[in-house]
Length: 440
Image (cartoon, rainbow, N blue to C red; front, side, top):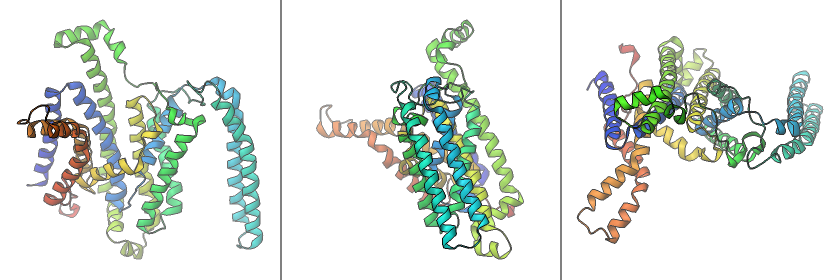
């Protein structure tokens, strides 16, 4: 089968699966799955930039996605005026102290060239004094903020801006964290780099769970504004009521589908823009250089390429895309739940998307995101149907039948493993493998 045929067949099959869900379950469910598939594809494009272009194993995907979620809160949540009055000044002062401490350490490090005892002592004193002053201002401010109606607020809130702005801000937040990680860890061996990204991802999630003054921690931030209409507004509109009547569906069902279609349009625009830019970069001299570094770092280094610098570039770009996807995910949920960011579980899922779709191929990343997320969501209904078929000859009260049907929800991980094994067996490089650019 030619590459073009693979593209048509894979995306055609994916469209057929979504149509089957629409006809057999509901169109609302089908469009909900479509939206999550679009977000997953954006996230996988970011990971593919890092791994498929440069061979960087990022095990901290969820940490960067969480930064996008934080951006959604800080940009779109309304500010809590009482909390700002109670401790906002202390938070600002503490962060000014932290920045001043970092600048002072940098100045001392730059001015005192020799690595002697005096330099070490000066930096140590600056850090200790700065930390003490930082905590003296931060701790009472945090306590005052979290005491402001903790059941409803207990945090500073955000800027109250449209949530669409948070998608770009989420990318910037994730890119900033990636720059810090890259500066520290990109000089390490690949396995140490993976461990570093996973560890920092866990730290990010732990901070978000515990810093209530910033994101309400495990109490979650609910009711974030939408970039699309609310179902209740659609249901009360005579214009949409007429459309629903003409289509022969209830206004409740129509409103649910219409809102999900609006989300789909927004997510599709973002996906197409990122895909277009990714393809342009991959086909440009920069993309050829990145693949040369990926295939043989020693040779690329010998030819004068700054390998670590290029790795930092692609790591920042890929992380920014992941941050955008994280902000999109928080947008569609309408809430920020730090406890839902499970680095080990969902990082594995994203990497399965990359492997199944085809590492190094942007179209492969998109189809991988669609296929894996579709079966991740539909695994339980498919498992229930399979168990019902297998045990159809048994009595309804049969203990084995009851056990198998109750265990259908556990088919999810089995199905993920089965898909991965089948793809690796029959198409080891993924559904849409990386193409040899020289042959085109």
